[in-house]
Image (cartoon, rainbow, N blue to C red; front, side):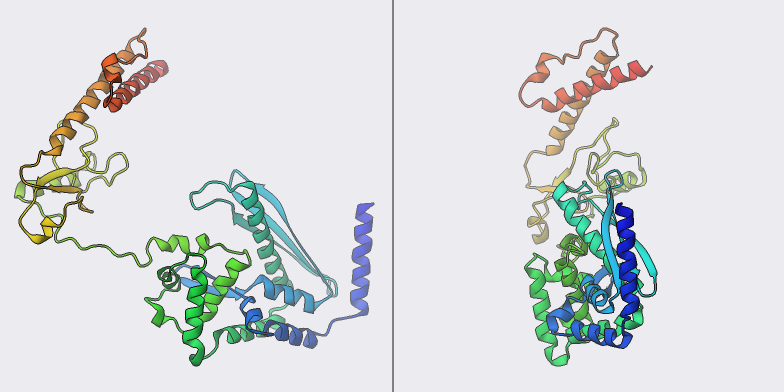
Length: 387
């Protein structure tokens, strides 16, 4: 019954379309008129995305809606066909059917369904992302089904309205930057997305791109994170210059650093989540993670006197003359942890060994040794089970 009703409905629409055929000239004129009705309408007809270091622009869903309405004698529908929680994507599908020519097209869009940390979105955000995917699919279907010659002139006219002229450039540029500021986007992020060094390099050609990016966020087709997050870490980031931070106090220290850098198996600064192989200091006698930083005497220069912090490249901690060397304590602590790990492994290798750490490891300040003992026990026990 439902199939018969749908078939009868489409047949009636086709008959009506043949009875009242469209006028291509009138449709094109109306599309152009509505797209350039005012500056706000023109701005909503453009979208922009920064891709590959060069922003791209195109017609938005709002222009596609104008095209579908003024073209007439057509059917368009969009829906979410799958939420793939394993691949973390949403798949939407849109169909455009020209009732007058009986031409139809179907467009499928895949939309990422994860946050910036790679986790699957919650149910509310999945619904929002699904709506955005449907909008993109519907836009693509309409602009594919309707000949480009019909709507391309309107799109170019909308860009011209948004672009303005040299007299309005400064005002439009400042307005665009302040508009993104309401979403927490910094000017440096905008410059990075456009590939310019500063505000003065934003020209008339960049104005439609800025307006299109703003419209993409406003229409729900994109988010602030998708447009700017990947560039925020690099945009406008300044680093303090350190006077020769890799210079060692003697030739021996330089030779040790070079040897540690050549040997990829040498455990150095950066093991367990730090940057390995860069200025690790002296190599310990046994295998295992080295202390996180080494120490040296502070010199008398003003640069060294003001650098009482960990240097960004070699992890060297500067200290006052006469202060205790933290390397000795760090090495001793590391040795105690390794001894506890070995003791745990020995206990775990015994057939009747119990997973009970020595009582002296349960005191305050010995948490690392206790964890190492338990880790060694579990590793040895799992190895014995597999054997």
